[in-house]
Amino acid sequence: MSVPPSPSKDFIREIIDEDLSSGKHESTVTRFPPEPNGYLHIGHAKSICLNFGLAEEYGGRCHLRFDDTNPAKEDVEYVDSIKEDIQWLGFDWGDHLYYASDYFDKLYEWALVLIENGKAYVDDQTFEEIRMGRGDLNTPGTDSPFRDRSPEENAEIFKAMKNGEFDDGSKVLRAKVDMAHPNLNMRDPVLYRIARAHHHRTGDAWCIYPMYDFTHGQSDALEYVTHSLCTLEFENHRPLYEWFLENLPVPSYPRQIEFSRLNLNYTVMSKRKLLQLVEENHVEGWDDPRMPTISGLRRRGYPPEAIRNFCKTIGVTKFESTNDMALLESGVREVLNQNSLRFMAVLNPIKIVVTNYPEGQVEEIESPANPENPEAGTRKFCFSREIYIERDDFMEDPPKKYFRLSPGNEVRLRNAYFIKCEEVIKDDQGEVIELRCTYDTDTPRGQNPSDGRKVKGVVHWVSASHSIDATVRLYDRLFSVESPDSGENSFLDHINPDSVVELPNAKLEHNLADVANGETVQFERLGYFCVDKDSTPENRVFNRTVGLRDSWAKAKDQP
Ligand code: ATP
Ligand code: MG
Image (cartoon, rainbow, N blue to C red; front, top):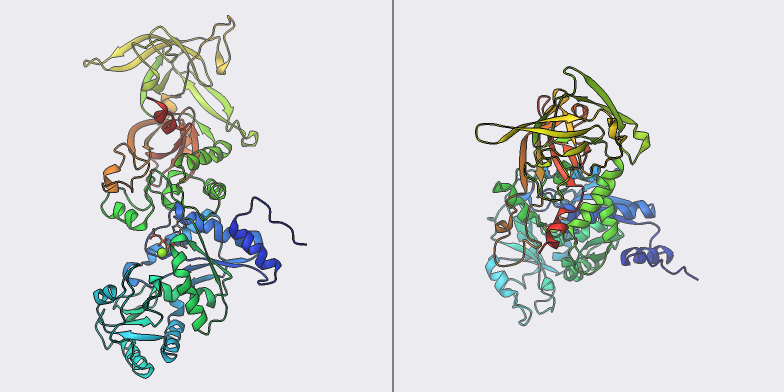
């Protein structure tokens, strides 16, 4: 008796289990087939985690295959970034790196096979005429006047197309299937077009290029892919995928299975729109930390583990849905809370002079490097007479229940003493520029005073003479509405004007001078921050990865 599938398995894993137990396949071969016409985004991560994840789980293999049949839009820059992103996500294609362009000779040969068998013909109609002749869901298509060319004539013209004897766009090769087929994809689809475009791998060797549909399934078959997983919009391409397999001498018969795309709120996912954001300078590049690209998320400080966990949590189904950005963000917090070292940083500083602290005296304070992980050890930082705190952590005229610093009020400095604000110093414009405080010598290192008095507020700080300068970029969601894609307006109209705020005068604990580019740390009380590649030895640049709490949920709850 066969073991019933475990309820947690998705439909794709159920199919694979069945194919393995029935002996249809001995092992699994999957592939991830990006077109190198843009950078990968979080939607691609779902497909990567699925395809490479299956290979890991079933001891099979997963190929990386570039679907490079459209040279006009493709570029090696994209090829390189895609490889880097997949590796960063934690996956490995081993020796199985392929390009659809590796199969151009084979595909050409197979086009001639179809021609020979009366299953393909050269059509001299324009693209517009072909489109018009296709009909629609209610109207059958009409046969092209060139549909009945003989196999000999078709072979001769097709060879001449390949040899560059005709102008771009003047002829195409079409499959001869059925112009009245209920599925429009089966109404004599185009197999080849003439395009004199330089290809990033084959150079100028070809002036005809195969269409995606004529390439994909045959590439799968040539690589002995067992399960060819794609998104739902290819569901009605499946009959065509199978028609090619049935009408060509392919070495294997892969099965196409469709699953729903990953959609995420507060962002856009189509490569065309992402390219538009880049080209029109709405963002600073594909790896702008606000982009949903893998390289953007990496630069933002997202750990690959959090992206993998997210993909696992949302699972694989056949239903279209939109996932919540907050779920991704909370997964990021969860991983970073475990892994990131703690430091203090003041983003928008105001100076405090602790008047009763001896001038020139410095004391070292030791604190856990990460309270979640005792193995991380401790870190040491300095306290001295002049410190910075956050401008936001002081109010001259505080409302009731304001527990942070205000004139005459006492707060605890995180990991250090109680201080009391005695005097507020202002410039000529009335702007507060400095605070004079006294500290309670009885309250070192976060301990409570002996008289038992309570202080509710805790503020973070850095010692002025031990701090380093930094620029901190507060990133937020790129769009201020849940579905920037829907509605009448352009998605560009919904760009969040506060999606980045740059704070150029931040002061950081000196230990942060040693943190490597790309590393993410916690700034206590503020959130998680990642060292940006724009950092220099003189000025560190940090990107906010995510705050400590979900500020969007809070904002939404407010009336
Ligand atoms: P776009 O439509 O944005 O241009 P694409 O789907 O054409 O993207 P490809 O490079 O062809 O981009 O995608 C490579 C693989 O990633 C395909 O198998 C595709 O189905 C999958 N993929 C792309 N977007 C998503 C998504 N949002 N969710 C899941 N898988 C996706
Ligand atoms: Mg595609």
